[in-house]
Length: 530
Image (cartoon, rainbow, N blue to C red; front, side):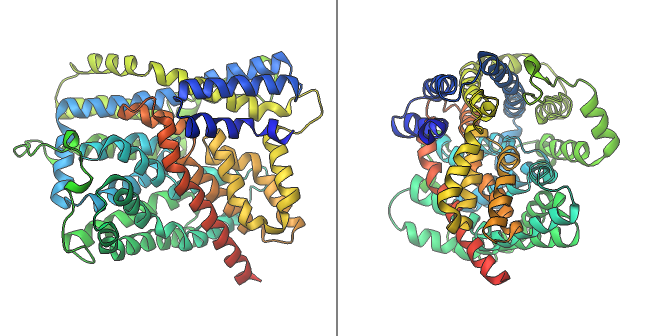
């Protein structure tokens, strides 16, 4: 039965990662197998399967709406020339692609994660990296890997507030778990800027002098990573876990810009061309008339609108109340629901910022309709791939509604693993979190699914509950690197649809490595707390 329960995990890895099938074909086969095995082995009724399919279709709509907003923003910025101006700004700050990787993918992406979540950061940062001259594959890999460390705290602390709601709602305990997350990331998350640069050099450049090129940036990368982790720790300690993923990337971005301006700890030589393909080299155009502030205005507006909508209670209440397209009690099942608060969605905010950006930058809305039409036409294959992926996910997660008195497939896997590996659970805890995020695509949902069993195992094994739950959250955040529907969405933005298997093979290694290091850091932390 464990193999049947694990079909939703094993099949995508084999079909996409091993056989290199496209997400549309690979996930369609995976969904079909999970539905058939759910019916015959888990005794899911046709009504539960139908409700799960309807839930999946509905859940795909908010993600596609976010994708639409991200693509609309990108294409509008291209139409006004703002992307070229942003590129010039980065080039003026530093033409070194190693530093640009950290600035855009990790720090700016981390800020977008802090005010948005929902897989939005990679969809925003990957096109920016391409505009800077990165190949599409490099841009996607770097954007996905970078959207891990900040995702543990997500959009204003949602993975803790919602993800741990089945375990505790006490702010003091949530802050204690948040503090443990930052302590674990002092060992591991602080390495993320150095890891991103290493990925760029090892996988996307010439083979000569690779280690030397990485060592040249290592002091700067380690300082930036350590500053980020320390700011995160101080924010939890002094303010609260809700603001970690806003203050940490924003504060570190300021530090990074200052160090670059004054050339502190920077490599002696600037590296640009080694990781740039001819087709993606920025054009050495004449100076742009648009100011840098005007060019960045739509992105700044996105950050401000997202932050205001999450922090200002009256605004949040209005945006979640009106135009609420959520679907509850699908086909009469109280456990089968799908949220879509249209005004509160990052997709709506991205679309609004794109429209206002056109008015500010081009003083005209003339490009809007042709651009929107082009975006919609480009999303067809992505919609199919995303839909079948979510069908598999929802049948998998709703499998607890069975007639065989079995736990759900995720819980069956968790209990099976816990039974045989409880003795080394601190090493396994982040992998369970990562497994949940790989399937569901969400740090929050993974934690909501597995937090209770993680807490129970910690109690039974006499381990620190706060450390185990922190490991669950960090592992789930690392799962963003390998989540299939995140890969499908960001691939669509940069025109790599059909190459999801190649992307998964690349992100799997850093994803598993991150979880392993968190497990080892947890082992050290637990021993220090004894």
